[in-house]
Amino acid sequence: TCPDEKTAEHLAEAAITKKLAACANIFPGVKSVYMWKEKLEKSAEVVLILKSQSQFRIDLESLLKDCHPYEVFCLIQLDLNSVNTDYQKWLIGHLKA
Image 1 (cartoon, rainbow, N blue to C red):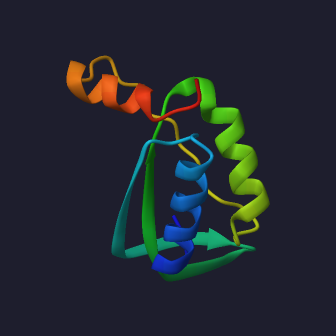
Image 2: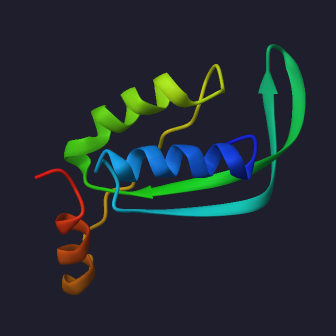
């Protein structure tokens, strides 16, 4: 998650430009409820999904550590058992060789 669309776009552009992600989806208007420093917080946030491959996870995490404004950001890797062939070829073609 990101604090706003501008931040999400900046992170998406950085990941795609460095060929660590082939595509990004940005979902504005998310309400997050969580504990932070012993206090219940409610925040409007933006969800950023970066489409990549597991071999780039460490580099993506490093990029986020350098660029993300949150002290603690969320990076979740979803392992997929199946991706349609045409999309997989497109994705691989837009990542680091």
